[in-house]
Amino acid sequence: MPFVIKYFQINLIKSSILSSSSPTNGQLSSTFYNNTCPKALSIVRAAVKQALAKEKRMGASLVRLHFHDCFVNGRDGSILLDDSANITGEKSAGPNNNSVRGFDVIDTIKTQLEAACTGIVSCADILAIAARDSVVELGGPTWRVQLGRRDSRNASLRGANSQIPAPTSNLSALISSFSNKGLSTKDMIALSGAHTIGQARCTTFKGHIYNETNINSTFATSVKANCPSTGGDNNLSPLDVQTATVFDNKYYINLKSQKGLLHSYQELFNGGSADSQVTTYSNKRNTFFRDFAAAMVNMGNISPLTGTNGEVRKNCRKPN
Image 1 (cartoon, rainbow, N blue to C red):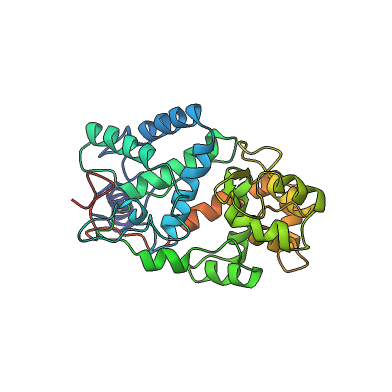
Image 2 (cartoon, rainbow, N blue to C red):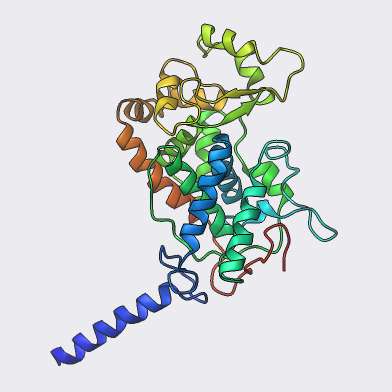
C-alpha cells in the first residue's frame, strides 16, 4: 500500500509539471513556456533592455500599458488592438489617447518571439513580462510572472473610459476602483508606487497645482513653469522630481512632503487611512519592493483568458 501511494504521488507531481507548461492548461504558471518556447523570457528581457537603453522613460510606459490593460476586461492584451471595421479599440479612450505608448516595443518583441516559436507566446503575457523587466532594469524588484494568458479578440472603449482610475480620484474612489478588480487597498497603495518613474501631461495635474491647497507651494510654483494655467496641456513633468528614471521609494517620500504631482497621488497622504502605509514605504524601501512585487502578481491575475478561451495573436494589433 505505501508503494501504491508513493507511485500515485510521483505521477501526480509529474502530471502537475507537464500541465504547468501545456498551452491547453487553464492555470497560470511561471514555467508555462519552459517547453514550448524556452527562450521567451530572455527574448523579452533583451528587447526591453535595448528599448530602455534608447529611452529610459519607456520603462514607465511599458508598466503603464500593463496596468491599463489589466483594468479593462482583465489581462487580455485588448489595449494593443488597433481600430478596425469590426473593432473599436481602447487606444482612443480618455485615459489612453495621446498618453499610452510603447506599442512599437511590444511589436518588436512579438516579431522576435514569432520567429523563435510561432504562435506560442501571447501578447497579454508579453505585456506582463515587459512590465516586470522594465521595473528590474530601472532598479526595482523582480518577481515570478505568472504566464499562460491568451489574447482577446475584441476591446472595450467603454471599459477603458470608465474603469481606469482618473487622476482626479479621491481616496474612496481609488479604493473602490481597485476593489472592483479584486485588489486590496494595500495593493492599490503599493501599485501607486510605480509612479516613482515616468512623466505626466500637464492636463492631468493642472487643477491640482493651480486650484488645490494640499500641495507644497514651492513645488507647485516649480511645476507651473512648465504647465501654464492656459495651454501647454501636453507639456510633460516628471512624476518624481528627484529620480524620474530610477525605481525607488522617493514617490512616497514626496507624498509626505506634499509633492504629489497629481491630485490622486496626494490623496494617499492627506490625513486618511492610507497615510500609515505611505509612511512605512517612505521609510522602508524593501518593504515597498516586496509589496509592489506581490501586488503586480495580483494585478496580472485579473480575469485572464486561459485554456481554449481567446487566442494567441500573431500580430498584437489585430485578431488572427
